[in-house]
Image (tube, rainbow, N blue to C red; front, side):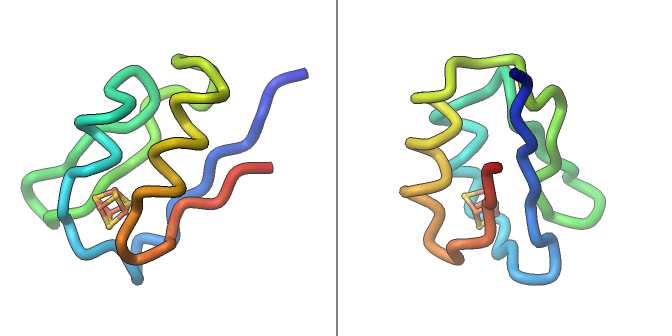
Length: 63
Ligand code: SF4
């Protein structure tokens, strides 16, 4: 089953931690200094979970 990865961009502080941990799922928009989802199924579930756990703003939500 494919997962849903949602970033609450209002809360994102632009630290790029998620992009470093899981670059197949998360990308970074330099224009607005926010992360975005490239492909929710791009990386392993562990990778996306790890990125969510390490997000200092706790704004990555995985369903
Ligand atoms: S880890 Fe969280 S706060 Fe940092 S860029 Fe990713 S979504 Fe934004």
